[in-house]
Image (cartoon, helix red, strand yellow):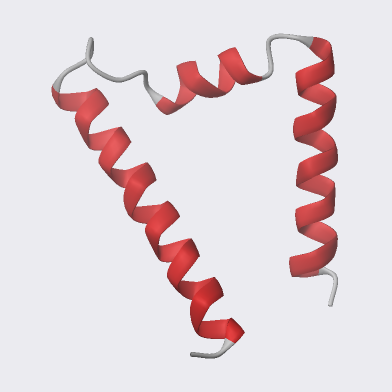
Length: 66
């Protein structure tokens, strides 16, 4: 396997996991937090928000700036 195939596989697994969480949160609201609630909890503290922004910048630089 090439690194491209591994990368695509990881993104597919992440996408399927995200879709599954969205589906479960829609079908059983109390079982899993909605993506909106999870992200709001993730960026509630200022230091975590800074980490998320820095991570997003790093990801953008490495994936989209080439």
